[in-house]
Image 1: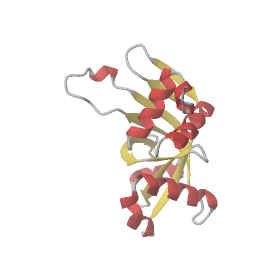
Image 2: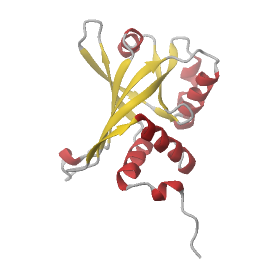
Image 3: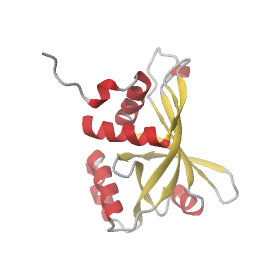
Amino acid sequence: MQEPSSPSAHQPRLMRALAQLLHEQRAAALATLEADGAPAVSMVPFALEPGQGCIVLHVSALAQHTGNMEREPRVSLLVMQAEQAGQPVHALPRLSLLGRARTPESGSAAWAACRAAYLARFPEAEPMTQLGDFRFVAIELDGARQVAGFGAARSVDAEELRLIMADAARSVPL
């Protein structure tokens, strides 16, 4: 008799690769826009909040990217597999996410869900959540571009991203 398989066992290969990348990588390159329209890129730790289908950041009001997101909420994040010695860098699995930043009201249900998701992934960050200049930012996803290796690239819509995040939440800790 066969054991029941997890929902992720029935996902196509590229969907599984995307879920794995989001689960294994904990930092992303965040691209924001300066007031003059110039691009700015920074590194941010991120968590997934499947209930809202968003990426969660915990940022300081003092950070350049925080002001940029307040002024212009359109952002992009790049999540990429780490380079491995002897492997071609051009084939590294990566995901470019497009979205809009919003700051949930402190104490709201959305804020509590973002906080719980972030601390589940980064429990060591709990003391920073007590600092007055830090806040949670939810990146509402509009879509993505996935590159899973040579000849394996595709566009991913927001609904598929939400399904992958929800499935990953049932299968593995985020």
